[in-house]
Length: 195
Ligand SMILES: [Zn+2]
Image (cartoon, rainbow, N blue to C red):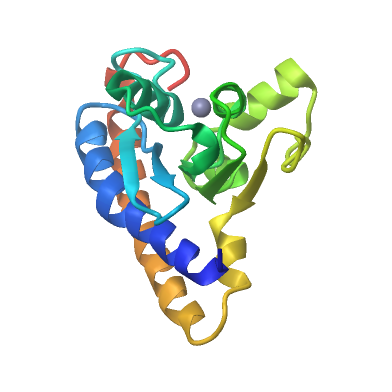
């Protein structure tokens, strides 16, 4: 699997499959986090979903995606699949991805981005308060899975792909900033425990 087609595919799934769902989710009062599952064989999409905490505070983008995946009973072995998360998963979602048997996940925004750019500090606060971990303190590669930031895939991709990946990356960041502003301005009206 070469890096460049994977990075391009992950960005296009975020932009074309996850973001439209998240736009609707945010309009309904949910957070901006989303996820998707792809086949390793041809990078085709199995399922994409978005945060649905207004229904259930456990429906983070990742867990909501896994819920849909198992509801559909598509019968895939998770070892054959790629897990994509728009934001670095929280401790609950890290565990959910692990329990579901994935051997990988990729993410676009980091925990620090969630805190600093999205005003959602809960991932890092929970890691510190519950697990006594500083930022970056969990094992990004371990016996269960290897995780990678899409930014790192882009940074190590070959010219001339890198420039187009970077411009797509910037375009996606702008859209998330708009959605984050919309979420933050409306969140006092929702009943999410950790809004
Ligand atoms: Zn989560």
